[in-house]
Image 1 (cartoon, rainbow, N blue to C red):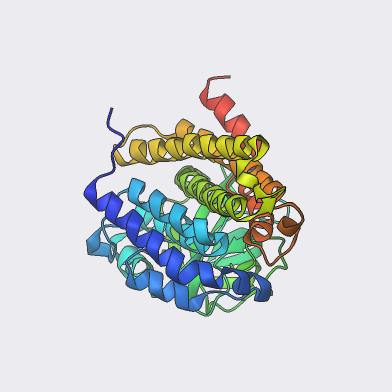
Image 2: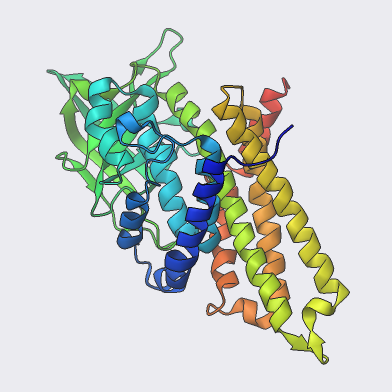
Length: 382
């Protein structure tokens, strides 16, 4: 059993760590305060090849593996979760549907510029009344005179309204099957489609520098060939996307926990009480030791899921376990980081305050903790 990273994986990890340290971290507080989308950082990540990291070079990507991609997300999120989720959502939710289910023509038209980082793309599954119950989709698409007419609403869609967003891939009901259940299909909806509108950015607790919006479709008509994948297979396709997306969010959670640990460790060394650094007190040492233990455990789970995916092994269980555990680890680690900071941890001038707010969504997005436990139980055969 070999736990060593390859030279390529280590090089990508180092590249992302240095980029996050030098370019992302100094901007994180300002971006959070102003809720400012980091267009320049996205451009830098594109120039570094990160926006298409796991896709083949023939489609504009870097040809790296999932382990490398997970390491990249960890390092970016270590500095700023908003920038981390912008990258993670772009790759796993925006571009991957085209890679897995698109025709060659669709890949050439959409995946190539996405992998190059020339534009972003949204992933529209959640609706105001269909969150954990993704099969409860109410958005409809009706085929009329060679075009699909879409009506409905999507909620909480990342990267869906930036100046460089090209469009959103959505699920919509296209009929009923033989058992009377909703037939759900996937559609490519370009940003300029008449009848497709984006609301203002949500005012969020965390991930404030990322772009998240509600989308509305009012007789939005798209050509018939904008169907992505086979008709009626949309829900199954999107659930496949979510399996891989859980690796992304798990990596994001680990990165956030790593960043909080970094801050807590340094603060404990710098902060003096009773004539010595608080790092000399056993109570603080035990907290830091527990934080590091849980981070290392979560990191191994994420990398195992990524390795299984790369080696074409079943990875759904490992990805769900990693997503669930790393999200809970990030909560515990960030909470302890704030505690170690004491009163200063409650102040926005210190990064752990931002991290505390950013963390919560890790236990909600890509399947809540409760849904993850249901998924795991189902995979256990229960």
